[in-house]
Length: 333
Image (cartoon, rainbow, N blue to C red):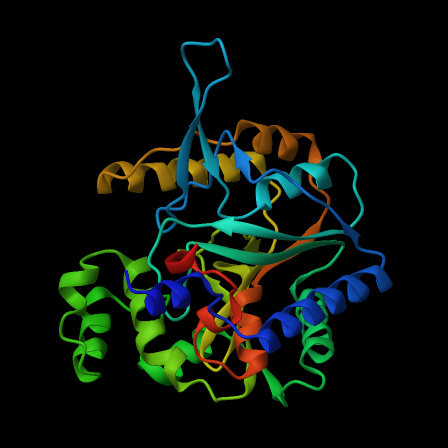
C-alpha cells in the first residue's frame, strides 16, 4: 500500500463539523428528555437471544467461560427493545437509551452494520402523543440546522392508495402485480411471489417513499395487520395495527408502536416469524423467554419508538451518505 493510500485509510470518513453536529445532537437529546422526566438507561448489547423478525439478521458470536469446554451463542442486539421492556415491566418510569445496534446486512449510502439508535418508551402514551413528542424533539434537533416544512400525518392505506393505486389490505396478488407492471417494475412478481409482506414493502419503497415531499416530515400510521412488528392491533379495526414510521426526504428514520403487551400474542408472533425463517433456511434464534415472562408479569400501557441517529444527523447536516457523519464506518473500522 502506498503512503498516500495508507494515510487516507486511517483517517475518519467524516469531517470535524459532522463530529460537532453529532455531539450537539446527543447533548440536545439528553437535555430534551431530562426536561420531560424520562430516565436514561443502559441495557446489554450482547445477549442470549435476538429478535425473530425474518427481515433482521443479527451478528452471532460464541461465549465460553474460562475452564469450560462448552459455551453458548450470543447475539449483538439489533435493538435494545426487549431489555427495555423488561425494565418497564419491572416498574421503571418512562425511559430512553442512546446505544449502538448491529445488523448483519449491507453497507451503503444509508446503511452501516453498526449504527446508533435512540430508543424511548413513554408510559400512558398512545401513538398520537408519541408522534407529538417526536415532532417536538425534531424541532429542537433541527433548530439552526435545516428548515423543515410542516409535518404530514397520514395513514399507510391513504398513502399507498395514492401512489400505488391499490388498497394494501384488500388487493389480491394479481392486482398488486398489475400495479407493479403499470409502474414499470416487471420483476416484482418473481421477487414477491405470494408473500403479501414483501409485496407491500417493495411497492412502498419503490413507489411511495420516492414521492414523499422533500423537507417534510411524514408520520405514517395504522399499518396493515400483516406488518405488525410488535404493535398491538387497533381497537375497533383489526385490519390494522397501531404502528407508525417517520420519514424525511423519503428516508425511513424510525419505527414506533403502541406496544404489544399480551404475552400469548407475542409468543404467537415469535412462532410465526420462526416458521418463516425455517421456510427460508435462516438461522433460528431462541425465543426471548425473559421478555415473555416480563409481559406475563405486566407491561404498563406504553408507546415506544426507535430512531436511527446516523440517518437523522445526515439529514440535519445536509449530507446524502451516512459515512459523512460516521467517524469510522465498517470500511474503515
